[in-house]
Image (tube, rainbow, N blue to C red):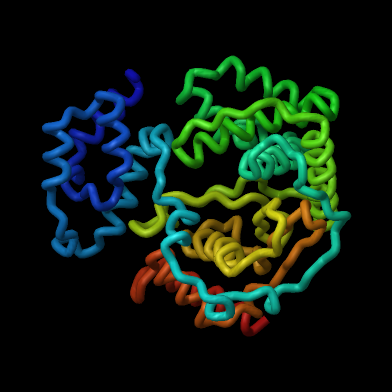
Length: 348
């Protein structure tokens, strides 16, 4: 609680405070009010602040700088303006954005049924990812691998429990590691959604399924050169008023991956999501993405993966996603970086 209060005091004294309108991040201030760090009168003042951001020549730049200056608070308070949240508001009729015909399908393992599992799919998928990430601890480091789970544990007062599950997922038996991954996955889902996720321990069927899917995922990642980054974060400069948070799943040499464990093939929004991850990385100027020229979706439940070269995606679709989904409009240097990258790839 004191941490929130200290960081909120920093926000109050920031000269750009008046430009962070409730239209931009209302959930942050609502959350602070729920924690009684922002009283009703102050919240009302926020609601009556300047709504016309046209008075600033580059409002997105102001917002990005503001978030960067106070990133400690924005990391503590779950942001709901995520890429997936933004995509939920977008109509994606089949074929008008992306479809699977643009991707090459790979068979990577045997299908895993969903029947009789006792864990919700969101936590199951995160547990599978965590088991794969845990194999890259030497290159990624503990802080990066368990960053989200640690933040959520601090948020809900379960730091000691989270630390214990970290040790288990790294050093336990397979069954113990699967159970640890489920509980850490629940914490990570808490951080991503801003809503507390409780879960029972996985039963024997669910444990078997999680371990099987994690093995299939690990096999694919190893076959593509191994994990170069697990839990792909984006520079703060990548984000806009449209998208305040996003995190990819894996990078292997040359390819950005999103992992799903649904019982169906990827749909338009799934494909658009991984494309937007690439746009965020390239648009921010992060050199990590200099050599990333492919995007892919892996679904270890189906035993399949789909991968495409970005240059094979219609240029108009990439630029439409950059502007309409993310908010990189004409003249934005981030859009210029994306255009320049597309130009280079078309010449290669």
